[in-house]
Amino acid sequence: MVLKIIAVLAAVSVLSGGVLAREQVGGVRGRLDIRRLARPVERRPDIAATGAPAPRDVPDLRRGVVYLETAPRSAFDEREPGRAVMDQRNEMFVPHVLAVMLGTVVDFPNSDFIFHNVFSLSRTSRFDLGRYAAGRSKSVRMDRTGVVRVFCDIHSHMNAFILVFNHPFFNVTDTEGRFELPSLPAGTYNVVGWYEGEARITRAVVVPPGGWAEIDLVVP
Image (tube, one colour):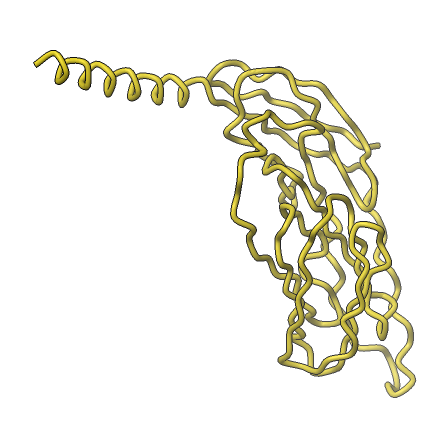
């Protein structure tokens, strides 16, 4: 009988702890306000084309990445590496900005009707996938944290970024600059706003127990 009572009390304690932990979790949300958007790289003239050039899609340059400069200790628990996709479509990398966790495998499918050659000379990840045709795909595992600048060896106007993190507290903004970093324990954090190759702004925020910190990051 005594053992049953102890077991019940232990179960109640665990459940109460779980509820309390959930109640203490909050997050950071807000907007990364980019006042001066980058200009897309101009496409080289196609010597095979005649007359006016055909309209081309341009990369979405309204998105940035917001992340924590230093993550809470629990963020470094063992996690299964995931998989992500950076497509090649209409002579663009889609998305233009991709954020992933360390160990993620990034697929680079070719959805165009022409050849592409994806490569990077970045310290974070140096690779050259060679030329491959429509319908094929090649992959790279991101084994180091940092920024990976991606290009196409055939089409010089094609470029993109992959940001690799060792924690999950990052978010690619939407086209309005909005972001959310949920599931954060209460505490003080440095929030970084990144745009087109570099960290542009860092602000300290205080996440209250079970609440949200609201912040606007303005990049002139």
